[in-house]
Image (cartoon, rainbow, N blue to C red):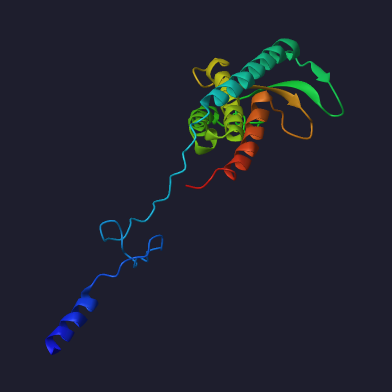
Length: 203
């Protein structure tokens, strides 16, 4: 009799517990399909947009054409000391600048170095991170077009050899150094580039 009771008790304890159909099963932490913890989900990388070199090139070409056309007009219309008054203190007055931008530093021998620097600037802004976005691409195009415009002047507007020419400046507010369209494009582009840099998502 005692053996029968023990056998019945053992059978009840070892018998598997049947799960109720439709009842949720509770899994302990770390249980997976193979008894191991499921892999942690990895963050999905954000796709990086391509560089908008088409916008950079388009804006640069427009700036370059406008700059060279205006300089051609200034040389042919203002050569000989002629001054054209416009509005207020603004006037057209021709200068040949052998120094840095805005008719500053003339005759300091900085012209060739400025030209080399301009080449580096064009490459840097054209392939920088901000050129992946419209505002940054426009800024890069303005800077590139302006730098190339002044670079062409230094390369070919002089009698002392390659890169020793003078930049044509003719926009004279009289309260600011004389400049040209290329200088204005570079300044506006630099301002837009700073604004665009704050809008570029972090890595």
